[in-house]
Amino acid sequence: MAVGSPALLALVRGLTSSSPAERNEACETVTDWVTAFGTGELLTVAGVLAAAAATESDDVCRESELHALGELDSTGGLQGVMLEALAALDEGKLNGSQVEYLRYLKQEYGLDTAT
Image 1: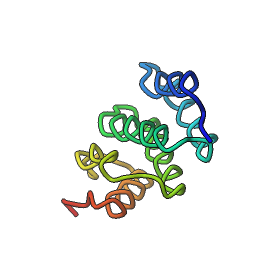
Image 2: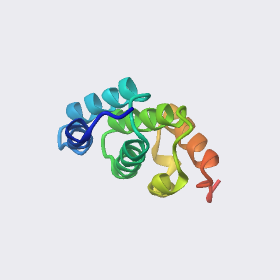
Image 3: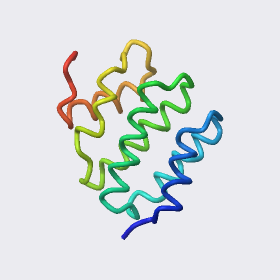
């Protein structure tokens, strides 16, 4: 199953929007579509989410991005190489649930270099 190129492109645009509201909405779409992604789509979305979370300035959006990555993890199709950007996140700048998501993903995908 796959969401298709037009939908994937629209989703990536939402995930990289300058609007926090649009980024949050796109993260919600990821969690809604979690089982609909084809393998390549899954890896593309995961890579975009990891890069977005690593550079995110909005706390609510970062939590949404990390949550969406956690949902994608439930598919069993993620690969650590797509999440490498998360290694740059400083736990000291995150709130409780963000730290939990980050620690889990770092440990699960061998990105846990600093803890």
